[in-house]
Structures are given as C-alpha cells and as structure tokens.
Image 1 (cartoon, rainbow, N blue to C red):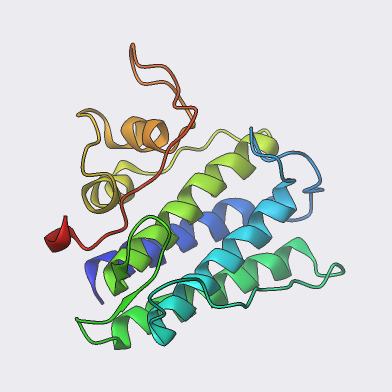
Image 2 (cartoon, helix red, strand yellow; image 1 turned 60 degrees about the vertical axis):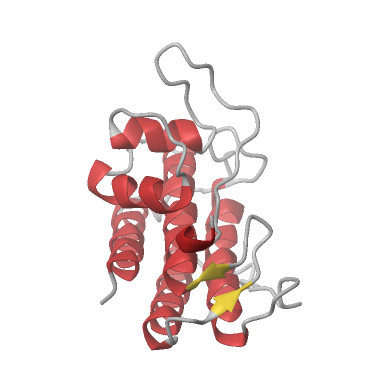
Length: 194
C-alpha cells in the first residue's frame, strides 16, 4: 500500500471508530463551525472520497465529473459510516491501481493518485474533528497522520506540532500568535510541478 493510501485508510479507521461509538446519537447538531449538520458533514465526506476516486479513474483535466454520492435519508448513522468506508476503500483502490503518471483535475491544482489520497485523508480528518465537536467529543487527529498530509498538501505550513499545525492550516484553530485562518486551501498540485 502506498504511504498516502495508508494515511487515508488509517484516517477512515479513526473516523469510523470514533463516530461508530456514538452512531446511536442524533447527528442533527451543527458540525463544529461548519454550516452543515454532523450527518450532512459525514455524507459530504463520503461524496468527497467518491469524487476523488472518480477523478483518479477518469482523469478529467478541466473539471469534476458531474456525479455525486446520494445517501438515503432513511439510512442510519452506522450506514453512513459504512458508505464512508466503502468510498474510502474505492479511493484507495483507484490510487493503488493507477499508473504513476495518472493525473486528474482539482480546483487547487491538477493532482496525481497520492495527492487525491492525501486530499481524501484531509477531508476525513478535518471533518471528523468538526463532527466530534458538534457531538461534544474531545478528539484531535493524530500527529502521525497529520505530518505526511502537511508535507504533501501544505508546503508552506509553519513549523510546530503536526496536529496543531494541521488544524491551523485547515482553518480550525489559531496557532500560537497566529489567528485562525478565515480562508484556507491546500496545494494539490504534483510536488514536482510546483
């Protein structure tokens, strides 16, 4: 397994483990500071993972494919987590089976398979953080998962604790004297093209 697909896989395991333990709660509360409910945020994660897999497989060069994940409104929270697991595995498989030269469009830069795996992992970790906050849980993404994501997608990230820097770069928290970012974006371009 490629290192970024391992980070993605481990991120999905973190999300499913944490949120699976509270799947019987209502997920109608806002997910941290995002505009969506905890449930809608989880559905968004499934859609991101599916969309990134689609970009790797189809390799469009100028836009997203016109396809979205739709989760049945009657699905349980456990079923939403199963959908996230399936979409995460789909992205892993797409990346693992792609040739090294495969690239697909993303608004923050045309990327390769490992880049899409990294973007998927960021979405999983940052939104797990959001959902945890919405449900009143204390959780922060592990530094061992954040560090490689910072190296791949945030080349100009400041030095510091990987978890704190990751949450800062994703606009979730201030970092020391640096105020919380109001606007943020990663650089999904292939590192050799930067």
